[in-house]
Image (cartoon, rainbow, N blue to C red; front, side):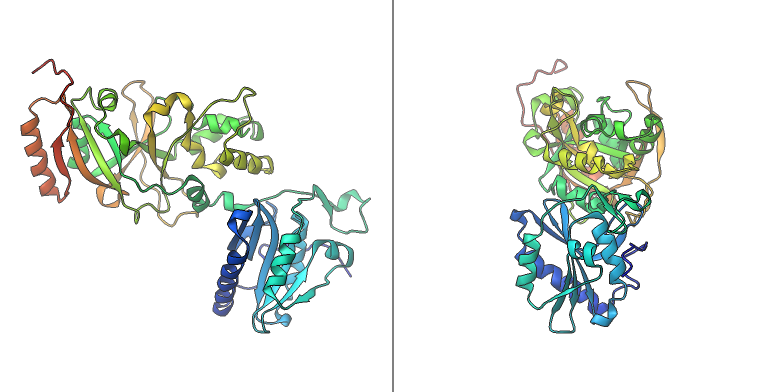
Length: 439
């Protein structure tokens, strides 16, 4: 039998039928119940996976501790698996995983092909009639990724048949994966600003999100990049590559709810307590696709300069180390949620918009404009998000303890908010012991 590995652009020769989709989802749910997450198992449906030069779509992929160890294809009949031979080649090129074919029209019959058997004998499926037996086999499958395998098992001495492993796992690139790893943030948050800044937001009906190059932390994104050795994996012209990503990420910084009406925050960010503290709730229906809302992770720079004890950065480093054509965009937006421990008192909760033009999102990018930063005269991009589209709802406006004519401002803001249809409460700060030299 010819044991070469044919090249294909996807796992199937055709898209799954409606019945097949239902069977895929049902089988995925059954596997999830039997392969526990706390044992390191993950079960995903309709997954892009494979070597970077030959990515395919598989019906179900099972991972153990991040590594693929079982792949499932669902078909209506045994005669409908003419493409499985090619799929087996793709699976066994990159991993020691077992390949299962689920025939849902034949009393839930599974056909299993193990890598060692395929390498030695070619296309040679065994039959299993029990999901429990399938699960037991998955649990016994060793998790190893071969450094090198061969297109023909009997030609190991021929260098032209040698295939170097180039592992690819699109789950890391999926924005939903980024969201899951960072966590879902639903607590109220607050933002201190000048009264002028709030007035502009209300007058023009939009929230301004600024680009990262003009931030006060010159190492925005670089700290995490360096820790996972991204720079060493890219071409020498890293500045040109980096600007494409960093100029398409826009943020607004908030603080956690325990910083509401905090004197230190008033003095640092609230115009020396003459400004406002706006309190927001999260509109979970709007946190989708391009928006990410999560607390910043504060980390130390390790002594060796390039290792990390952070689990998520370690996972990203493992991914980076297995890429031959890494792009900066492959690891955003996670890289923008790490800052040096020196900034920890900020307790920042960051709202980020990934504004790249990419097929990963169905919504178009927001229009990018430019300005010179006030403090450093750096040309910096920004975008304006209409209040109706913004993923945060303004609930309360606290007026600073050092604000002049506070009673008049409170009444005028309440009138303005009412006219705009914004139901936020306006009230003075409860801090009364901060000295106001003008009173």
